[in-house]
Length: 142
Picture 1 (cartoon, rainbow, N blue to C red):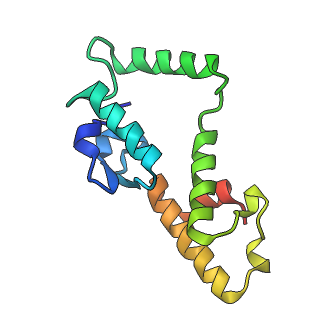
Picture 2 (cartoon, rainbow, N blue to C red):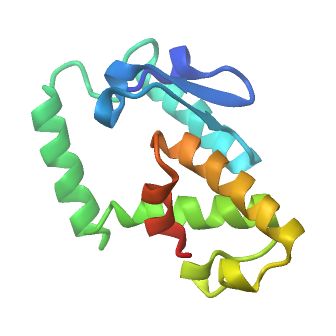
């Protein structure tokens, strides 16, 4: 919500400032699809040079409205969106589903696949703004 889309857009990724992110961790989020680009362009159009919080609302007011609207839309566990992102991104990077999404356990992977798995987990960890792969393993399974 605090993100300023126009200021974050770096072409192939979003550069998120610490003050915009949970935990105060700066991060880069890749823009990988035309659909993501289209949503970002719409966000830039709506926000102009401002954040996603309308100028007439406080952060707290906007958060309450967002929670109300997502619940009304049937999206009550929004942290699950992070799980979904992690799992989809892992599959893009490895070519197979994560264990949490029904893919193979790490122990069943070849040595080469384990290397791919590790690099993908590190990439997803960075994109989620975590500092430890153990946290990402909760999203992806082992």
